[in-house]
Structure formats: structure tokens, C-alpha cells
Image 1: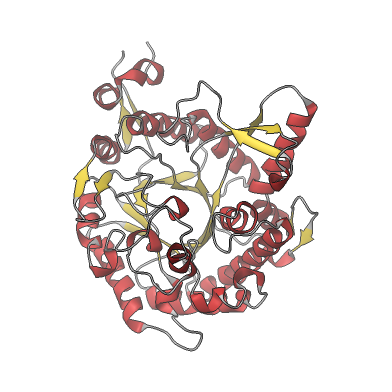
Image 2: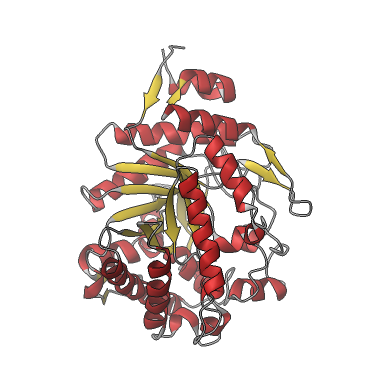
Length: 440
């Protein structure tokens, strides 16, 4: 195997991504806490990673010591605005403290303003199905950005709006747990409108800001040559991936139920956030009307995670970045999430190395990829799946709050410090893919 290093451009952002409800602990005033108490999740978030009581400090220390120069985290709307007529200045000060903590560690912050959670007062009034959400969310964004603007210029308005809508209103695994495609499309439309309003609000408050959203993108292939499989692949692909991108590209939201004009959304992004985990194989299934007669899975020979939740398909990551560049030519791209569940840390090292290599391939075409945020820093509460999935570079015991470094944390640290991926790193941490990544 030759000795070589795949380097990234100077100033490239290397970090990890987290979300408030998953790490803060005791976020008792949002719809997800309620959903947990009603028994819809695999366990309870509880203290989570106990960030609200200050343990973010030691986790930020770990990230900084590991060479990370950036961090993506979200703020919790229900803490900042616990009631329609009340703002919690102490909550905002805690977020300012976190931002000062990142600055003191020479790490660039990226703040997500909405990551799946809504205050109970919003949820009880219909949440994102209620058209008033657009003004509610814009007001929250104005308050939050004005309070935090001294320390942050990078903003994600909404994380994975497609997953929020489809999991809550089609799959039923997220609150409110229903199966109604029309309601899901209404939610996505209101999220697009709220994003557009927030984009303009943020720029009015902070001229130098850069604002985008984070899209969960799922590349898809048909299982066979069958025209039905190809048709179902197209329906599923457009239904999952294209509502937000189409609205921001053209001002028209595409959906399985038809198109909807949202002209105010056109052009409302300064960068695109991409969350990539895996690629789906899709086929026609007459027995699955719940998902418009489509079904998806992974090839039988796929390199899959311990719960078969993710297949290690790094080429799908490359094709995702290619799609982003073709859809938004010259628009900066941030990989806002990428990672794999792996409590044993046997798959994660090769998953990480192979995906970083595919990103390097994309960068070498001069595609404007500016940063990479690994999901995630430390094991956290994975929504309806609870504590059954371990995505962290550091393991967490939720009962004792003890953190234990996994080997992949050292691999990622080496990548961050080198600003690249070397043959020595691969040989050390995942020699099984060395010949593939560094062929003779």
C-alpha cells in the first residue's frame, strides 16, 4: 500500500453535530418529552448527556483536544419561549455561555434553530399544521438570533424538515403519530414558509450572517429493471427529498399530491446543509399502501449497522454531494450530519474513512464543500429509538454519565488535526479497507 494523504482545503470545518433534546436533559416543556411519557419511545431521554447542567464543557474540551475546529448544536425553543408571552433570559444566557465556550476553544459555532422539537404551547395549537406557526417561529428566531448574534454567524433554520413531516405525519413514529400524506405536505409547506421568513429576519438582524437549512437526503435506486420498481423509486425519491429543494430553487414545492407555489421561498439560502447516512433500494409493494405502495431496504450483501438501521454505502455520499452541486451550482455545501450507529465501534472506523474519502473526491472536483460535522460527539437519545442506537465518538452510560472514548474518536482526531485522511490512519484503524482507499 502506498503512503499518501488526501488533504482538504485550508480552513475546512471539522466538527460534530448535536441537538438540544438529545443532549441537554430534562427538556420537559416540548412535545417530544410528552411523547416519551406516553410510551411511544424506546426508553426516556431523562438527563440525556446532562448538558443543561454544564457537562457540555467537558464534551467541548474533548472535541477541541481532538482537533475539531467547529461544532453544530441546536437551541431548544421551549426553553427560550416557554409560553407565548414569556421569554426565558436565563436560557438565552446559557446558550451564550456555550457559544463563549466554543469561542474560547477556537471552535466555529453553527446553530440550528429548530431540531424536531416544539414547545407544548405550539404543539397544543396544532403545531406546524397551524398557519400561525410562520409568525410564531419567525418571532422566536428574531429573539434568539438577536440574543446570540455576537457569537455566531452560521445558522440552520430547520433540521430535516422532510423527516419531521414524514415521520410524524406518514410513518407515525414521531409526534403526533398519524398517517396522512396531506397533513404531512401541509407541514412541509409551512416549514418552507417559516424558513423563508426566518431567512429574511436573520439577515435583517445580522447582515454578515449565512443562513441555510439541513436536508436529510436519501439517494435511491430501483431494486430491479421492473417499470413498477422504477416508478416507485421516483415517487418515493421525490416525496422524501424534493419538497424543500424544489421550493427554494424555483418557488414551487413539489409533492406526491401536486405542486404548490411558495414564491417567497425562492433563493432563501446561503449554503446547503446535507445530512447523509445511507442509500435506499426501492421497489413496488402492493401490500404497503401506507407508503404509497413503495418499500425500501438495503441489498442483502450490504455492510450494515448492528440494528440494520444504516448500510455503509459511501458511493451514495458522493452522489449526494454531486446532486447538491448540480441542484445549487456554486452554493457552499456543509455536511451537517454523517455517521453510523455502532456500539462496538467495529463498523464506524471504515464507515468514517470511506465517507471522508468520498468527500475528498468531491472536493477535488472543486465542488464547494466547506465543512463536515460528524453525527455525533457523544452517545445521545435517538428519538423514538431511544438509547438503542450508539452514534457517539464517545460512549455514554446515561445512568452514571460516564464517557468512554471509542477508537473512532482517535481516527477522527487524526483526520481533523491533519486536515486530511492518510494511509497510515486507515492502516491503523480500518486496515480492511486500506487497499480500496489507497490502491497500489
